[in-house]
Image (cartoon, rainbow, N blue to C red; front, side):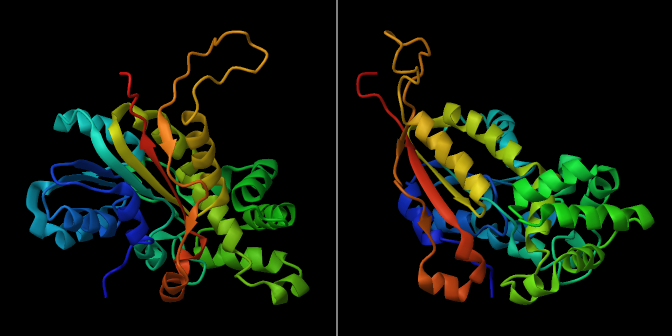
Length: 316
């Protein structure tokens, strides 16, 4: 059975793809969202698909082969979309979608180093094209203070200090090179009572934190958001699905800021910032996956979707 993208119906509802449109799928994965976009346009639109994972790109090429050159594939990080737009000669986009987080392909492939269930090299990179160091190298170099900060901030792990100390102590004796090595260290750092009461594996938050740090996920998202509004045509839609509260917060604050005009403090008699409204928010609150989808795909449980439209000034 082919992988089904999270909240694909809601993505189409807010993206509203049209025939002749040009779209960006910045996290192509196995091509689920792109497939839905093309089907909604009866194949009469074009999609730029970007992904750092070469295996995912190869599988999407096969899945989307029937659409020929209406899908353009790029092996890169999504925040670099602008250079590929220039190469294609596209002046702008009629819509863009990001489906953040780790794909099923990555989680289910032990050799990619994301899983604490199956053993594999401690990698965690979304793709090697970005030139980033794997998690094993990060753990070799990081200080106790910085590791605690990573686990606390990116994993929102209440036992961050305890876990960080256990990892550093283990590292000082022997390099941590596999996923199960790290998972066992984290699990042992949990008090037995908390371990017994935990709903998820004790290593869940730590693995998430390291993955975010290795791939610089929040930095990449912020860079993408700084760029994307320049390339969205008036009326174009931007749809973002996040799986982590920090990612969702970044999107929420960006949408809120760009949906306002002047950002100056109230005591200023005249505007000094010259900020102009660039977005209209379409989702007052983030949408979550429907109960049926969560039952069929438990990984959709933490998904949050926000959407906005590029503002078109009626006076311009």
